[in-house]
Length: 425
Ligand SMILES: [Zn+2]
Image (cartoon, rainbow, N blue to C red):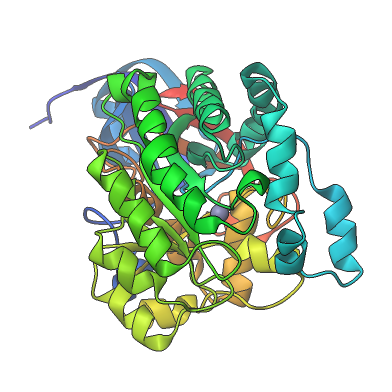
């Protein structure tokens, strides 16, 4: 008896290790350590979607493919998903980087009108084309190290016209078709100077003016045309927005059809997690200062706990989020770069994962699931993150035959080739 043939565009054969999370959806708590490693595997793709994956001796002879690719014994993992970035902005903060090395604190630089506001001034002065031109090489760098889907936030415009321009730049970045881009509205990132000392008045402008303008821009964008929702985020922190102000911003976004998420508990635990969960936030991000009771709340929720280890690394401290505590509480942990010019000028998700393994004590399997299936869930995506039939053919081929090299080495690039929707880039 012979099994039915499988028609495919591409067969990837001679895969040393084919690595994927089992099951469906996010992996929470102890299940986050689960991973399936198939030795000597093959994978068949049709129309950008995986149609079969498994041991090569059983699968490869059945596949009738137009193109056959020899993986030469290398490991193949799902394409990485960077679920929290600020990739679009103008200029840099290299001067502030040196100031901080000499002792200045990030939060004091922000309070003195530097930091986010420095980037805001440069971003406001830039055209949409200039924003895209500056973001493009960053996106290419992220992709080269394995990222096939990336979330990108607004939040350096901080007025209606400039926030909409940032959104247009994010849509233009997606149109380059280098990487799948998921947009998030973050006008509540900082209070711009024209509202100095009147944070409350700026919150009203965000709710009454900026968010509706972003919802309109989204409605006529390529994202809406393809059913891709807009996220809404706020920076809930002492020097940024209170829990109540953040709540009003997220609730206003939700009324406009946006999906809430929150920057919370980076420096202080103010109660942002409980508020965000009550609003059904898809994720709570940062969490360095999260208290045990809030970790328990995250564990009992459907929300994803997004940790951003490159941020503490960049600050030169060890104030990492307690990822082990989050897992012990039953949470689903995701890892993102938080790429931004101030607190995390990081352009490698494998590096963020490597830091998480060392300082947050994640196993390689927990880190891989954090940057694939759980990151997909943080963005509301269920069509990617695993290498199994029915999923998008977004995958990375490593240089090594053992997939753990993805987080073992650091400083170089462990990724040899990147495939997006069935095509090597
Ligand atoms: Zn961020």
